[in-house]
Length: 88
Image 1: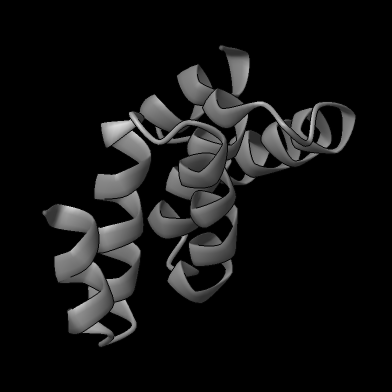
Image 2: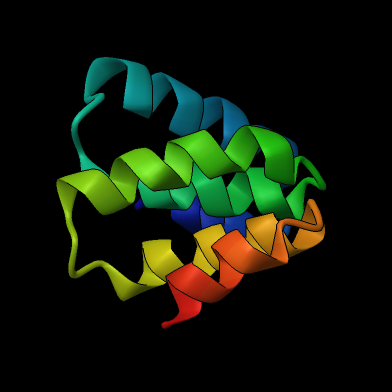
């Protein structure tokens, strides 16, 4: 929750550090993976975000936030076909 709050207020570098540590401690947690992936996208690092968000989707196939964030990241890397699949 702390890392997500940092992202929402624009403290992206701090959020990324906090969330990366949290994911290292809890690598299967879909919420942490989603928050970390969204932060990477916000930092302009969509290629790094995609595998993180894919892990979130695999762990929670009903996590529409992770699907949407993965689609955004894929659009930003010009992989529009993959993005479309995540939006559907």
